[in-house]
Image 1 (cartoon, rainbow, N blue to C red):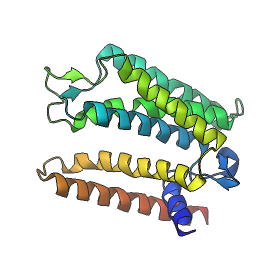
Image 2: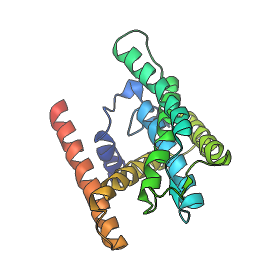
Image 3: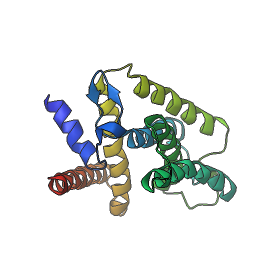
Length: 211
């Protein structure tokens, strides 16, 4: 029960948590809505792939041509979100999950390479230079999306994957604030602490607003 409350506390930091827009697993509503679930499934899949396949390589962001193609994956969520918000059409949780996954899937290609000290070096290889660099994370995203949608795993495990990804993603972004720190351990500790503090603050503020 405590774990459930903690997961939903951090989910509240970035999501409205409307039940009708969220996936339900074994009678439990997930900690974030279907769209946010998709976004962080996509982020998780690409981050996992890049970490295990690229972490020892000198990489940089994708080429201009590839970047343009990747950015097209953001369009479905924008259309679905705006259309739903403006009452042009009614979205569904399946559509929210799919468009969210496509949106989140491309984000790490632009952020993860910046962790490399040689990211701006013209001699670095683009992070996406083989077809498997695209298709394997996309395949993993689809598999995870299916597991979440059909609820084949315990809800706390699925929530744990999403909240873990949220904390990692915010810690990754926070790490740029401490780029001048040479100690990896100190930089990691500060990044995680900043991420947790920021998410906690957002969650508390969200609670106050909805009271």
